[in-house]
Structure formats: structure tokens, C-alpha cells
Length: 334
Image (cartoon, rainbow, N blue to C red):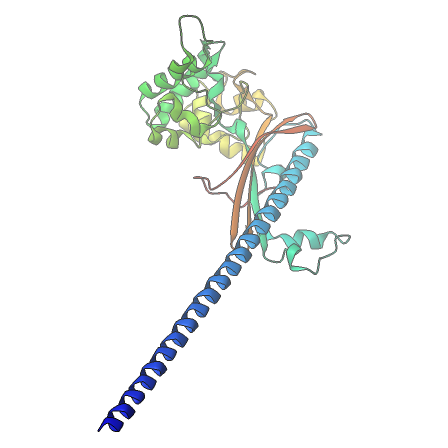
């Protein structure tokens, strides 16, 4: 009996030892698999970060080139010195196209073999907009004094868009307080920040809904500007020209599609001499433009918009920003 018990105990110990060894082996395999998976994930993450950063840098340089291209188009257009209208090369949209098609057009540009400079999956689109096709908010005040002509234009625009006149009064008051110099009896903390974009009008107390309605029709430029009668939309034309009705504004839009306006005489010949036109509030040439670009590079989508000032054949970029914008980028940029 004792020998049988001893054999049973020995067998039991051996089974326990085998079970423990199997358990240790399973734990070892689990740990090795976990460490391997963690290392693989870290490597994958590093590759993805590097790929995204490379795509971002490539997109940045391509958009810089697109902006320079747009400046060249505006500069060449400025060489003629004639009126700016929507039939000129700068106003022609650029539909989304492979970047490689532009490079292939240049016979001296060699296609790189390495994947880091592959442009077969890069698509470029954008447009150039005439910012003087809109009412300039910065024209409302001059040295803190309300400008009668600009005030009348904005009053008509608010009426056309169905916005309450109280919001226009709020806008003017906010601008006056933002531009007022700080004196001994006032505090800079009480004045709102001076906007630099249309999106910043909320700083003056305007509701977001009002800003969204105004955005397609107004702009913020560093100096007072007139409305370009060759590029403004129907609503802006109706607001900008005193003495014109909506039918007259639509007539102007239809007429300039056939032949652009070379001067105020062309406009008066269509709508009559009762309209009030002057070189301060109305122009046929533009100085400020917005360049919008969109680059789609594999899974990366980059939007950029810039404001360009053109004086004669000289162009300079006032500001640039990248991001996702509320208004879609129409496929254009030429």
C-alpha cells in the first residue's frame, strides 16, 4: 500500500509540474505576443506620423507654388491696366486636376522615381475671387466719422438680406469703439478687438446667424475701397448703386456678360442718368483679390486662402491661412 501511495504521489507531482510548465509557457507566449504587437503598433504609428508630416509639407510647398502662380496671373493682367471683369484669365475656374498634368506640360520637368515626390495622386483646384465685388466694412468709418455713402450702401444691403437695422447700428458702434484711441478716461479692456476677417465680426457683438448671411456679400480690407461694377453680384449692385432697382441691377449683370463696363458712362447708358456713381464708392478696376486653393494628396486634404493686393504689376500677400472653411472652395484658380 505504501508503495502504491508513493507512486501515486510521484505521478501527481509530475502532473502538477507539467501543468505549471505549460502555464508558464502560455504566459511567456502571451507576453511575447503582447510585446511584439506593441512594437508593431509603435512602428506603424511612427510610419503613419511620418507619412502625414511628409504629405503636409508637400502640400504646403505645392500650395505656395499655386499662390505664386496666381500672383503671376494677376500681375500679367495688371500689365494692361484695363478694367477687371469676369471674362479675364484670373476669373476662369480651375477644375480639380492631377498635379502631374501640369508638370507633364513642362517638357523640362523630369518625373521623379522615388515615392516621396510622386504627384500622381495629387489633385489641385482653387479660384481667384475679386474682393471688391463686395461691400468693404472698413469703408464705413474714416477717422471715427461715419461715411454717408458707405452707410447708405450697407443700409440697403441689410434691407435686401432681411437683416434687422439694429445689427447695422451694432456693427457701426462696435467699429467706432474698436477704432477709438485709448484716452485717460477710457480703458482698452472696454473696447472690442478690431476685426481682420469677416468671421471676426462676432467680436463686435453681431450674432453668428447675421455674420453667416453677410459673409458672401461683404469683406474686410485694410483701406476703404469701392465696389467693382464688373464683378459684383446682383444684391451688392443693388445695394451699392443709389437710385437703381432690382430689375436694373439684373440688367447690368446680363449686359456685362456680353460686354464689360469700361467706365461709369456704360452703366448710366443702361440704367439711366438718375443713378449716382462716383469714384469713391464705385470702380471698374480692382486692387484686392482672394486666392483659394485646395490640394488633395492621397488621404490629406488641405485648403488655403490668401488675400493678395495688386498695385500695377506689383503683387503682395497680405495674409494667408489654412484650414477647413465654411464656404466650399469652388474648383477654380486661374
